[in-house]
Length: 265
Image (cartoon, rainbow, N blue to C red; front, side, top):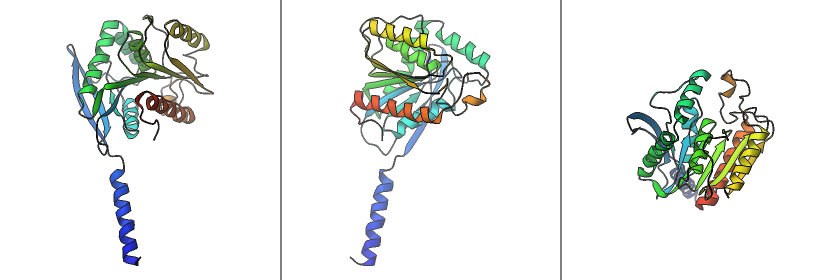
């Protein structure tokens, strides 16, 4: 092979590799639940063809912020279409714990509204042309973990539900026949999700006949997936890079199993 031919082949291979790389696109979507305006973020890989599973992402108690958007992008890079929803209302985002608690309490005060807000987001995700509407999962962080577990308890038609440092208790009690597989990921140094909460949750899920798994990460505190957790000023919150990486890999493994997509890329 001549030197020119070698250079041509190398260039062609480089071009093909570049074309195959992920091209992540995001789109802000304004939608409503009743009279409440909401704003979410859709993320997908435009280099991927065909319809693929969709994943709803439910934010922490701070509201629809960059952390939730980042998780949607991570899922898009892994081959899914993700929608980071809004449970509070357009522009209701905060960095102040008192405001966050107020917003979370309001969102969870009525189970019917909680479910309606979640369903409004699922409807937006299913409308995306890249999504297979028959293959939907949901994940949640902190407050969002509470929400997605409530949706499982209420019988939402989801393939899987996963929580990261999520609240496990609820005034909604699981009934038999929970549909999705459930994965709970928590830190064993999390003062907000203690051993008693874990034990109570396990009993509830066992009694309901749910297919569930609980993974505990050594030394991880609450909010271990959020790089800004240490800036919050809330005791017990801290980012843990190792737990963040391992928990996301566990999520991709679960999604790969339920959707037949091969897990992490």
